[in-house]
Length: 622
View (tube, rainbow, N blue to C red):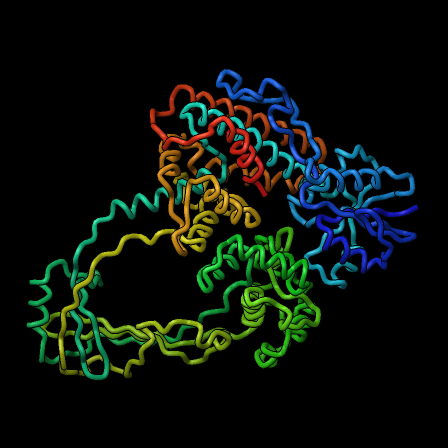
């Protein structure tokens, strides 16, 4: 008898086969005397379209909404049907005694396998391979510590409920609002509130009226200061007032009335989760969130140089210290001069904390010898970020002196601030990469009572600036922090870890907003279109607020942790009933409450209806 291994992609299947010593090749699989390794090609199976559930739904009619089928059947995707048939045949082969689920270790990977398993009608026992990196050592360790498939039933339930809920809300809301406004409108519980974030920022920019203000600066010879009022503000509303202060102090003697110099420490930043990696790559290289994810996925799957990238954790488990020491020692030559300066790796709560590790730990390089010469330029950039972040995490704090001087001239006060490095610590890894700040200037050691003549006073005209348009960096941050904007204090606390979408799906959400015409890129900026603004205007608050999806994510996250079967059934029933009520509300809102609005005319409405609905229901989860 043999064991069947089902991977998510052919490349991962070949990696596992190599570790298992499986070398024989056959149609859509690799074989040996003990194992057969096969694979999906992403999703082989998914939920049926509405007209496949019931033929009456071929017609887009308001009176047929809401669509709330008791069960949404599964279907095999036509474009990958051949590979599904290979997997199905192997699953039901009498020579196969057990199956190893080796799809990606996360909610979506679990769903991919379970849907295939169900659609194939398989009943054989399943074990779960759960790994965070694709090195041979990690795969071997994973194979030695597999759990029964039932241990992940909660994760599967969470994934299935998310998928079906997105289908129900996406299909019903998209049809209802498309019919109401005779336009191609894709509506979803993640993409619509994300769009609302863009629209809000663009509205603030549009409504912004710049105002002139003035600052008075004094040159005291060996240092400079800026005028401040009693509230420590530097803005002076009128030029007349600024000129008056300038004239009053020019050439006069100033006296130091306050002088403080404190030693401060800044610890290394936390390790990368996917969102922080995407944000930094956007800031430093202009990469879109989607591009960074694809590069990270390549470094994980193909190059075997980083651990699992689709993680929301920035911590490592306590027992990884020996592995991290090995990883640091195996980093290629450009990094070794920095590694040598690290003392033996020790436990530090800001790096190692079991209580803050979720399905996967932070993104770090793998513990294998590697060469960066094989990488593309873009891969080098992302690997460099990840490698430096791990090294920096084990470096001492950056220590600096923070100086503040208040100089009084003729009753007017001028503030001087500056920071001077004492010990570079972890910042030594980033020399030359950070822009020098104005307040990093060296300031002489001054005491209260010291006097200086004003060499020159000057007035500088400034303008208030509007908020900046969103970029991938700021939009990802806004999605991640969406739950923090909720006014209800109790609910905000409960939802502090619930943002819009998941790290694995946020890039796809941004891409989808652009694909359906709600947003567009202008260089690094992402701005809403007229169509996007109109949708946010007509959609109910429940669809544009982070509150709805935050509640979903909180419920789904808790569902994934359930181990009791009866509790799973109760939670599933309660969750799906709430989704049904929500769909009914959305349809009724579109019918009776949605305000009149004319959307830009679009051709081929009927031909595109199915496409828009399908785009919506396949992408809001993760």
